[in-house]
Length: 153
Image 1 (cartoon, rainbow, N blue to C red):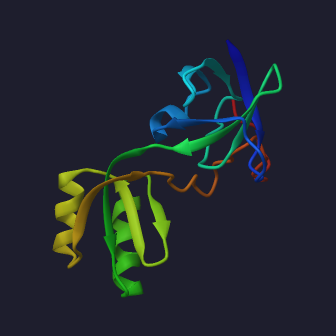
Image 2 (spheres, rainbow, N blue to C red):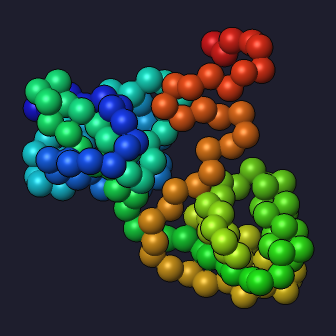
Image 3 (cartoon, helix red, strand yellow):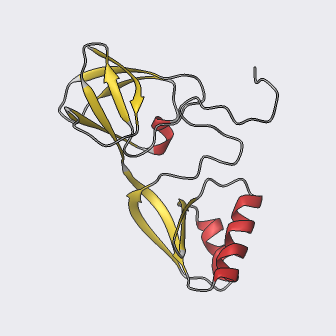
């Protein structure tokens, strides 16, 4: 079994891929099946989140590219920047993980949140799509410090 750890998020050759939903990409220890069918054990530092395109390296030199799996999400889009800012504000106020793109926002499907955005005047669509939300202003991926002068337990 391959033992995988975070290697890089730079492009390059990968020997195989690993497709996982967001929930699994947040776990620091996980037994997985690579997309080629091989079994592997994932070992990450606590708090690291795998992002679409990240690279893992096996103890045997295997390089694996991480892919975000399609999962049930709600997506809304608008050319009205104020309306989109209001939507993000209200979703963020509910501590909802958001993936934000140019003119659109996506979150794990939730009919209550969908209705809230419809009341704001947005159309909301349901789809199966890769979900790769923002990490948050104080959350660090890949072990980089966030520079506000204290240590976490």
